Each structure stands twice: as structure tokens, then as C-alpha cells.
Length: 162
Image (cartoon, rainbow, N blue to C red; front, side, top):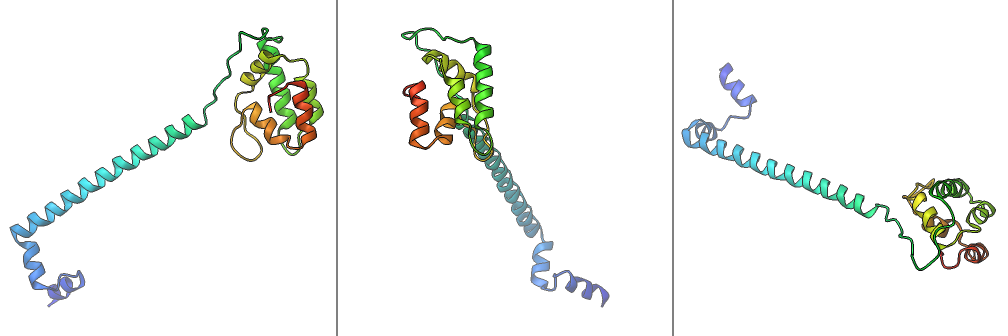
């Protein structure tokens, strides 16, 4: 009697199901179901890994920094690469956080020729704002200075960058 109660507790109270599961054909069917389940799980895992890898590659491609090339038709840059790095850092500090310092930005951009701006742009790269995704120098300027007065001031110093 204890064996029968034990079988009923395990959910094998149907004698036909118990006989089928115990038979060689039943064992083969269970083995086939397990093999199929493992194959589906393997395919699902491969699809998940490829999808995650593809997503990461897409994000890296989309968020990459594309440097500007200097224009040989314009005069050479009027600043060195070290000066460009210093200007890029000064611009970042002037625009990062809440509120941008227009005077510092104008002072930093003043006197640059086109290829000088390209050097500063490349030295700036893509940087993180307080909120949002990484932006280039031109994107930062467009994001931080939206009033017509601010934009006019920047375009007066470097025509066409905004």
C-alpha cells in the first residue's frame, strides 16, 4: 500500500502512462523529447549570443567618433596638437554640467582658423554630458547654445560651425 501511495504522490497514478513510460518505446520517446529540447536550447543560446554580439557591434559603430580631415585648400592649422588638446579641455569644462559659459567658449574659439577648429574638434572627440549620450564638439555647441544671440556670437567667430 505504501508503494501505491508513493507513486500517486509523484503523479504516476495513471497505469497506462506508467506502462508507456516504462516500455522501450516510451523510453525512446522520452529520450527523443530530451534530445529535441537540448537542440532547441542550443539554437536559442546561439541566437541570443549572436544577437547580443550584433547589438554591441551596432552600438559601437553608431557611437564611434569620426574625426574631421583638415582641408588643404585652407591655411594650415594655426595651433599645435597640444594647444588643440588644451582648448578642447577648456571647452569641455566650460560646457559640462548645468549651464554653459559662453564667454569662455568664445574666448577659446577666438582666433582659430578652419583647420585649427578641425584640430580642436578632433582633440575633443566624443565626450559625455551630465545627461545623455556622448557628443562631438559641434554637437555640444549645438546642444548648449540654442538662443539666436549665442549662436550668432559663435558663428561670428567661426562662421558655419553651427
